[in-house]
Amino acid sequence: MSTPAQPGTLPPALAAIRANKPLLFLQAGALGGAAGSVLAEFAPGGGREATALRLMIATGLWSAIAASVLCAVLFAAGEWHQRRDVRPRSIQKTLLFGALAGFVSGVVAQAAFSVPFGSPEFHALVVRTVCWALMGALLGALLSRPVPNLGLLRGMVAGAIGGGLGGIGFLLVGSVLPDAIGRLVGIGTLGLALGLAMIVVEKLFREASLEVIWAPNETTNFNLGAQAVTIGGGEDHVFVRGLPHRFASIVFANGLIEYVESASGKRTPLKDGSRLEIGKLNLVIHAAR
Image 1 (cartoon, one colour):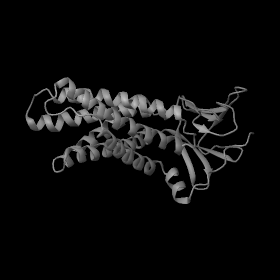
Image 2: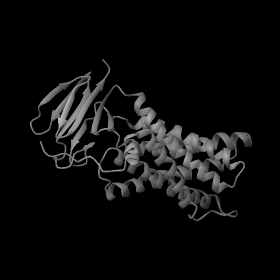
Image 3: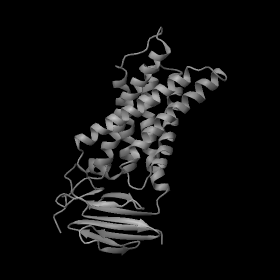
Image 4: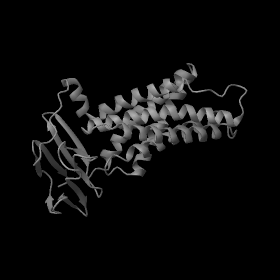
């Protein structure tokens, strides 16, 4: 076997955060959302005399900046958790698609909010919360792509939950503090809730998982399913420096878990508790008995 990536030399506190995915995503989501909101405040505003179209564009630009930063930070946190190299090209793509998702949701939100219907309270509470949920759903769909066996629909559901909670946070804070502070808290809450919701949804639908033991007290877990979890030195889920791209994969389909060697095509059945070793890297299968 080729030599695997060596365990990181991070300080114990940072190593503990990287191994704790819920804590990592909570922190990354909150900080990414807050940072995105602060940067978005520099976007050109619509002004009180602005036309409806200009207001929609201004809201779209604000949402695009906030969403792109939040997405990039959560994506980078996921890559760091999985011990993969954070490639600038991947960050650029995440920023771009995050901005597109944010712009679309911002324009739709402003358009919906500018149409008077129902009571003022319904309009302010329900419509605004739904619009925040729309932004979260689009971001959840984007962030679900690199997570094996999470799925687009589950990512959107997780994102919508996070967005709805972010909208509620904005309403609660914005009712007593300036809108800028409310937006900061709202996007920060969206990021925090989005990170948490992605973790909860991922675990909720977990039937089998792969535990990767990098070093003592440093592990990463992947959901197993029909989408193969790949192992190798390229853009693989389990990154092992020195191995070829897609050196091997693990797939769970029709109740059977298999380890597949790419070069030979050999398939080895696995079960709960099965252990694999690739150099000094240990892999453990967890499944319902």
